[in-house]
Image (cartoon, rainbow, N blue to C red):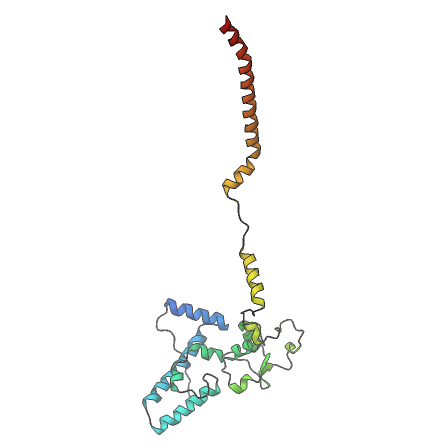
Length: 248
């Protein structure tokens, strides 16, 4: 049977289970990269932590072996696309988890426009619709090198090879990722925003009340005029009698 093999974790879990800032950050990364769970973030952070630890050890020593290991580390990170060419160990110390997550096959399939969303990218990979240099790749979390990045494509026997397939996303360009409008489109966009933001002005209650109470006001005025006319008639009737009494 051979020697027994005990499975061991290849990642470190958080030291404290309830940390609000860490939980919010990990939840945002899971949503952004379409990850299955937070364990994938812990694996990536452990790998980045190991690279930083190795870089710190190499900066502390100046032996020939350290120089050799420094070149091997920088060359490996350059092939994986984690660092730019001509980088040094200080750039390794500034690495974060997002850089490693950007080099995953799932993220590269989405960025190259082969999938509409990161979740769909993961589904296409696990179902065998994605190949690297003609070989089917079924591991969404594998790190893609600079050479492999150019060889990602659909599987030749996949129905997604047809441009009319409904699941296949529309071709995207770099302009699709830029949401800022051009100089010609900017005024039109601003006008649309103004019209959408403008709301019909509501009349104040003081202005609305006179309009609603016009008939009542007219009735009051008419009744007042009639009352004045009746009072004048009564006064006219009473004046002749008073004059005759004075003569007597």
